[in-house]
Amino acid sequence: MNVDHMHIGTNLNKVPSTIKIAIFTFTHSSYNSSRSMSTYSIKDLEKLSGIKAHTIRIWEQRYHLIEPKRTPTNIRYYSDDDLVKLMNTSLLNQNGYKISKIAQLNDSRIKDMVIKLNTGEPSLTIQSSNLVKALIEADELLFNQVFETSVENLGFEITIEQLLFPLLENIGTLWLAGTICPAQEHLISNLIRQKLMVAIDQQRVKTESKLPRILFYLPEGEFHDIGILYYSYLARKANFEVIYLGTSVPFRDLEKMDQIRPFQLIFTSFVTSQGEDTMAQRIEKKRKAFPDKIFLISGWQIKQEQPFLPKNFFKVSSSADLKKALDYFLKRENRKQDYKSYASDHL
Image (cartoon, rainbow, N blue to C red; front, top):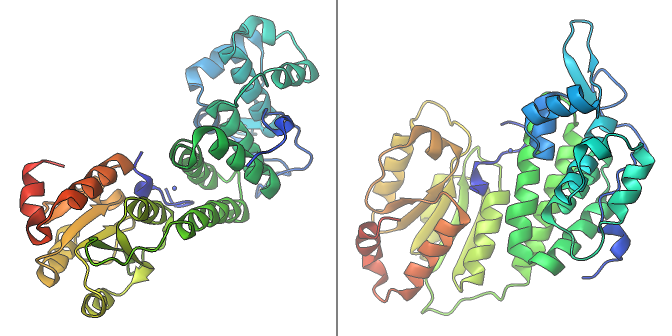
């Protein structure tokens, strides 16, 4: 997954075992501009549950598992309760229960059966379902419990890449659909940001001269920093000295920073369109200013425009790409010639 392509709202220790199972009982209504409860399209349900829309319709028509309501203009929509039942049904189905049998059970019985699934480590599916509940109910405690359980059982990086970043993609979809409000989006994204900052803070600051130095920043007008925060964590973990400048950094500040503390590599991301300059023009400006630096670039705009890249620019499409690049540069002795050898390796 390319975590830098996500921009939310515009597209992106041990805990008690009782919280390890997805038991969904909504105690209050979520935000919606026109209804007291959240509403979802079938595409929203597909995105959140991972169940194909075609399968959802079959479950509706053949087993009457959920029954969508319709607007005055005959458009189908679903409620929080429908989402909850669909997710719990999916969990049971993945654990060997037939849909035809599940459809005959009432909601209370389904929840009891979900509880009994707690026979070991929670799966990503169960944890993902709990995160959706935390999102809809703006439940910080539940979010923290799910996060800590996942880190304990799966590790920090798997939790971030396979649990939290997919959640961010779902948030973007639901925000656009109007089924969650900006406050819910901001809460979850800031909780994820907090987790990343704690992990970064736990990495020892490396300043040894023998280590390559990498600068992370987002250009002016770019504010979606969760992706580069995570990438800067990976660089620190890989023993790089990291200079993290954050969001919306004026280009002239990069030149000043290079005079104060010279760096060999630059990581940046392009998510939003910026003014009249094309991506190729923005890249050329950077190349002229830093012809001897290695640029690692990512983001939605890079993916969409597919610009020509100079020989010292390399596209990072995933955390695996970044790890590969970092490992390469750590092993090179002649830093100034890295990009020439690296280009031949076809990152």
